[in-house]
Length: 311
Length: 261
Image 1: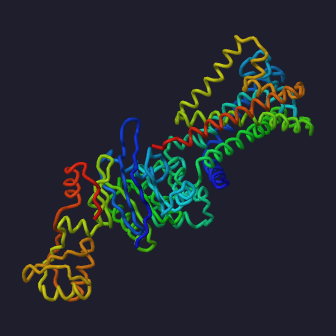
Image 2: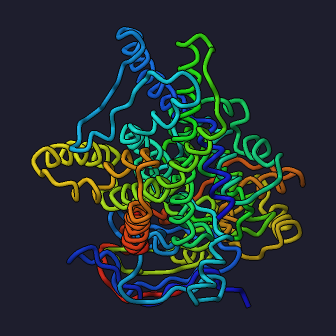
Image 3: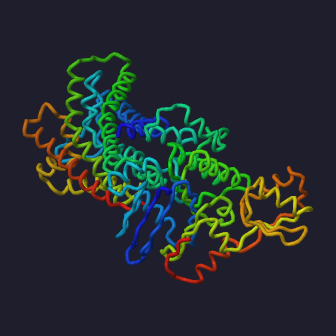
């Protein structure tokens, strides 16, 4: 059974008279890349700030790593790395100095860590440049560097893709996937760039007007969206053999002598293609079909304030 | 908490703020020494006048005697607490860096106390460094021919020690203002205008008691340590400690409940 890393139960949060979160509940499991989706002002940042103790709730409860006493919550926050809203650093310090400051702040004695982090986030060349002279993309990378500084078990990232160029996006995604796959870091991530989110998320939480309207796993979402990979190959028999023996899936449908619908590995098209090609199957065309994450979300929110669904 | 202090001292070292503070002192001392030079070596300088005129500083002494003289205008040093407090904590709200420090494992109590201790250490070190810079400038203007007495150094340390609770109190009040207003310029404006208001009020309220209890006037008054009775010393310490404790309690209460939006 998987361990719940973040559990929010029936949280209500008011800003003055205005409700930011209403009877909001959320569950993030260990190893998840939890895509937190919602429109502006729906309560995503408020939720993340609540988890990080930047704000307090009016009612409701929070569990982190299965603990809920104030002392435990404070201790377990050491295992969280975060990037909330825009990246914030001291503008008069360089990237290296800013990270050194936070390494000292966190009591990290390893003198090599700053250099290693700068290299990991691709800022090793800009380490001496003042933060005030950074582009937004560089700022986002530096913020990610700070978030992963203390080898967190949970990363909370609020709109981390903002300002990143296509190359930056790809690198950022690669870092997150590496952290998730190799170090089993759980990631709670919000983004407006739903396409980007759909490349990495393993679970989704859809929030609308302060309410969680659906929590759903990636496979369940794909099923609901009717998502599949449409493969156009020269030999469907040979291709089906490769899918079963190499990709280990029987979740496909042969349409005719050239086309196959693959319902698994939708986000791993590269792996599928290379397996087919390696085994002598000519891949003529690959297409992702079905409802996009954006369309699904829009359909869901048009449904309004429905009850929470778990899939 | 030690980690927060270490980090802040690192940041202080890397910033240029201490250079700005040093430059401020040098300009002031240069002005005083030049005035002294222009008046045949007997120049006095006062930033404001209070009813006791405790803040008139003579630039005539040649040697270690200048240090206690310098502390008679400690209300000047009070202004330099502003950049220190802004630098250490209030700017965290301006730059948004508070979002990086609050979520970590330190409690808000530890964070607030660490910032207070950091500012207090600097506030107590500042008069010491200011005296040493003043002594150096004094010697430059007098051609390195001064007299140095161990007692002068002891007296300087005694005055600074007596002023310390008040400096800590000012730091506490400034932190409280900073937490309430979350604005560097608002804190600066209030602290500056406080001295103005006090001087204005002091000019009208012709009472020695007012000067006894008004903290900034007390700060200068303490420099006349040889004239102080035990009751004066006790009162000064109580004023400083009361300011410190009250402002810390209030500041922490506000910070504990503060929403970082």
